Amino acid sequence: MSQLKIRAIVQGYQGEMLCVYAAMDEQTGYMLIGKADKFDPNMNFAPDLAILTNVAVLPTWTMFFKEEQLKDAIDAYHTLMSNELLDIDSSMQRYDPVSAIQVNGIKESGIEYRFSESVSNGHVAVLICALFAEKQRKINSSLAAQVDLQNNSVWREQPNDDFVVKPVSVGYFF
Image (cartoon, rainbow, N blue to C red; front, top):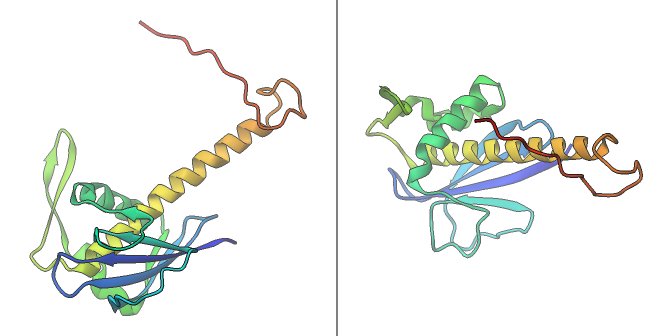
């Protein structure tokens, strides 16, 4: 079981700049939000750590979050929660975004959300973690499908032909 260590560093919402620590099982896509601490400018950015942030001045990051991605992050949060792939430790329940997200209505483009006035850096950090986890799940699914396709000899010229996937013709429908 491969575990991905995650640190979400967020500022710009209620409260002090915050670091939320999480871990994700890459095989299953299960994520645990474990703890939070105030940001330490002298923190170690280990190479095996995924850094998720909305702070442009950090020296390194794995995923940079922009506010335009909030709807995607909320959708990812709901997807992970409904599939029981996200667990928030009891000490972190105050940062569960379910208490800060409100449905604002439904339009042709889908559900619209708004935040209560009490949205904090912790709420957004959990949402960023959910967005990252959902993106990782999609990447892993895509890679697994490619490996399955690669291992299927119907698609390969010869059974021992390494890393060669033969093109498939695509038709157009008018």
